[in-house]
Length: 261
Image 1 (cartoon, rainbow, N blue to C red):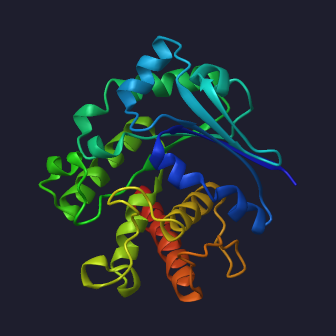
Image 2 (image 1 turned 90 degrees about the vertical axis):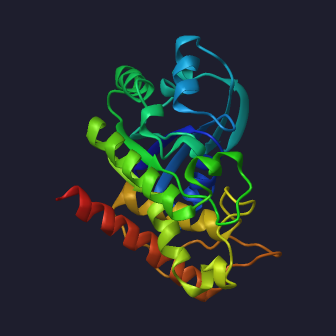
């Protein structure tokens, strides 16, 4: 079985995105090595400054046959530690809808990745809008309005992807689609897909995100037999899993259609 290697350069939102990715992939017959360079609340500007200063400030999570977490990692050494097939970039969530905060750091970081991992396809990880009652300070940038934040980040990530000629992992789109279903319509009594108003809920939110990553990276549609994370406190029902898989799939289809315009 050929192994797919994907590295996320991100923060806690990339942690949410890839937490279940390897298990999902394995259950669908795909061997995937997943790496995540993590600093909480890390922006594109800080990622680039870390490159310039060769800062060993990251936690590095490596999900593989033998998984581990290390402290004091640097972007360069992790880029050169594997023959990555994919490397993902993203903006910190509270700045995600403000494109002026992306540059010049996105171009600089992308060029650095291309220099040190030229074989890797670069993708843009689209983050998601906060919950309607989120207390995150950054929500004020969007007038504490979920739809305003979503439209802003959707437009900003689209511009970023066009500049890099990169594909988008449409997690924000998937979350909004799921929120339109009664099971996850938080405003009307459904479950929130956020555990604290902004991070993904465990396990439903992270499961949705992992499904989006899998379908984007592999082009495969998830089966009903796919890995389902276990949770004694908040188990995923079969009805929820079906909705989440559909929203993940639909978001990828929507993104593909947009790319082909």
